[in-house]
Image (cartoon, rainbow, N blue to C red; front, top):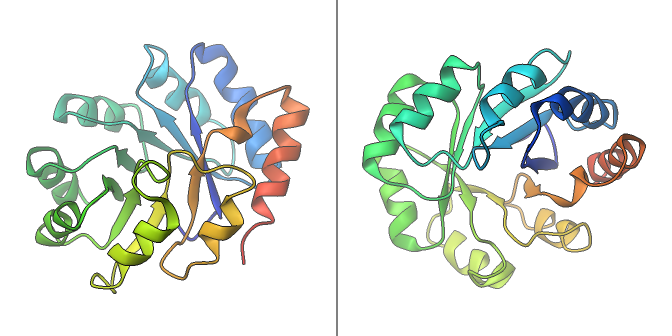
Length: 194
């Protein structure tokens, strides 16, 4: 979470596009790449992106232990989930792999605390009340650090990043356009680190 101000949230439809996309993002300064498990190409995309020097490739939208096992076999270096259950969270925590579960309420964060977690994805960030809601949640959970995702844009990212408990944001806006455009967006996003 401290490596990049912005973590690209990537939905890969065609694994053949994965490596060039990862190269453009890394060249632009974003090394931490989250490949979402929303398509049939995701596992192969993780394998392809892992071959790019400097890329730190993880799996997002992991919602089951079967998916967790599959992405670990593919070489995922971190796990992101849209929510948090003990059934999914416990084996991930026990594996020692970095894990960023989605939270949107005090109860979600308390479930994470029960598992020993202190780093969370605030999701869906904008529809869960935005920065105002996260500030309210962060107060009683002063040890927690967050990565807001879901509705975060290039324009709103600096506001999120200015809030101390926010270590990074997740966004999909970076991964659209030509590879030259992706690299330029990545370079701009990498410059958001305060």
